[in-house]
Length: 303
Image 1 (spheres, rainbow, N blue to C red):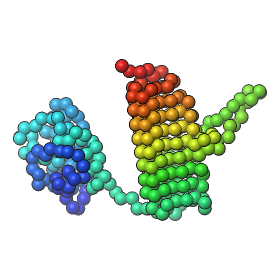
Image 2: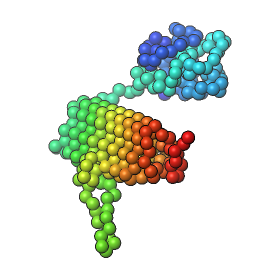
Image 3: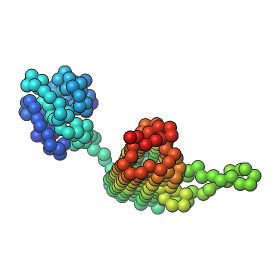
Image 4: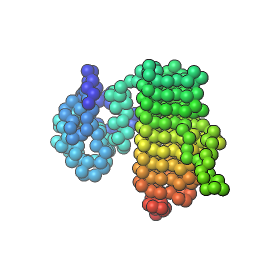
């Protein structure tokens, strides 16, 4: 828990969320830390993401000084005599903005002494390269943060304000093999690269493989969780969410604003449209058109 020396008031909190809100209770309340709602005290801000009466009960019984919760919940005057309740349409989003504004440690740019940088790499001065990283002949743009023990192969291009968590590998060769007449495996050289657009986040120990002949591409604003595998030649659209332990087979395509949920597997060369939801643990073996939800093994469209 991070404790601020300067206390934060309601007006500052509302300004940081940037959303329409209704305030119940003491509008002069100030807080100095952020905590889970069941561990908070009168100096804390917290949030409740439940819409039901259960959510209202959690808010009523919490000791938090300020609670952000759903605008649809109902409270009596007694419920907020000792706390301030902020009602919004998306409590988690509002809370995330408060955390980013007041409780997130600001990253200082620079290159760790133990990082290894190829001489021909083009790295913007306003970036952070953590300890024990290797950066090949790459381009890394402004505001990007590369955490420790990350390996970025040559022929990778990383845009602005990208975050790569520790242990990620970008630009390694995928498993491209062909059997010859003697049934032996011969390597298909992977000579493409990786392009990661602005605002992307890549989780810890995730692998993004380089393309075989063309590039592997991750679109603007897309977020990829920990322990994911992005195969060679995959193209992921803009503002997608690829959650932990997912596997995207080589040359698969993911449209804009789509989600691949926990531990899902997309077969190679599959095309998934825009605004698609792939359910947790699903195995996708057929193309999925725009706006569909698929789930299961093999994945089937849900009505």
